[in-house]
Every structure is written in structure tokens, then in C-alpha cells.
Picture 1 (cartoon, rainbow, N blue to C red):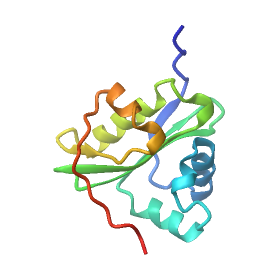
Picture 2: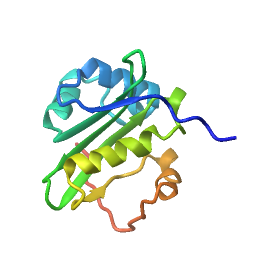
Picture 3: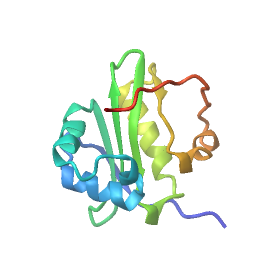
Length: 139
């Protein structure tokens, strides 16, 4: 039996509060790979984003967020995709990706680095892997 799609409201929220963002990062497990305890960096991450899409439940609780950097013409880097563990597998992540891509421009190439636990998710929703990515870790 498949899960019923979560009743969520999706919106562009460029002024998302850092506290709400961190709370969701923790409920999604993404906080393990983000500077969740560094309020200044979190605030800067949100301020520097070009596209922030949120998903909220009926009570207004933030249950999903995508944060992207884009030039609106060629590429969109989806740097954060977080969905509260209690509502995962209900289509929220897929919808956040679609809304992010739409907001940045469907003519852009949407790029993301997967969290290790999510590697199997992205092909499932139609994304293709790319084998040549290089990174320089922060000092």
C-alpha cells in the first residue's frame, strides 16, 4: 500500500527564519552535514540563497525546504533538500525539487550532491547520476 501524499503547502520563502531552518535540518538528519550549531553561518547560507522553497503542514510547521543557488540561465545548484523524517516518502522532496527548478528556470540544469543515505532516491525520481564531481573541503 502506498503512502498518502502529505497535505503540504509549498511557497517561496526568501526570509525563512534561521531557527526554523535549523529545526528542520535536525528533524531531517541533514544537520549532521551542515553547520547547524553556527548561527552566523546558517544566517549567511539563507541570505546567500537565490531560491528557498518551503513545505508546511496544516499547522504551519516547516516540514520541508530546498535552498538553491542559481544564475537563472544555465545552472541551479540545489544545496539543501531537507524533509522531516516523519513525512518522508510522501512526495514532498520530489515536489520541492520541481518547485525549485521551476523558480530558477526550467532551462537551467539542476545539480545536487546527494547525502549518502539518499543516493538511491534521486534516480527513483528521474535524476541521472554524474560521475565527475570534485570538491575542495572547507578549511
